[in-house]
Length: 104
Image 1 (cartoon, rainbow, N blue to C red):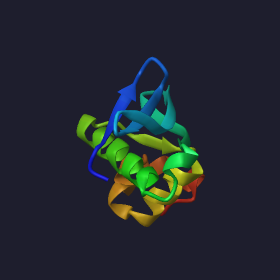
Image 2 (tube, helix red, strand yellow):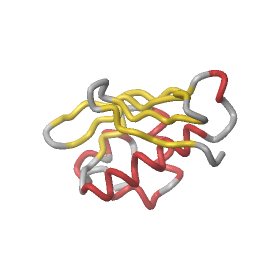
Image 3 (tube, rainbow, N blue to C red):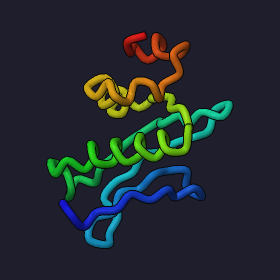
């Protein structure tokens, strides 16, 4: 889907994915000792099955990499995404990976 954008809505503490000018989903977060804990990801039912969850995860993780921020994937979807895409594993602090059942 080409007409999509991911935005950090810091006031609501969530990254939002927009499609065609309307909100399609989000990833909620909170700061924990300088790391960003992603706690929940949700895609609106109207947009299910379009790969937007993965697009949101990829965009969020790329943004965190660019800013040098570490991620704590409390959200099962995001944790699973990182497990399937090991190129993002380095964003999870090595001493916290076991807690998330990710490879050391």
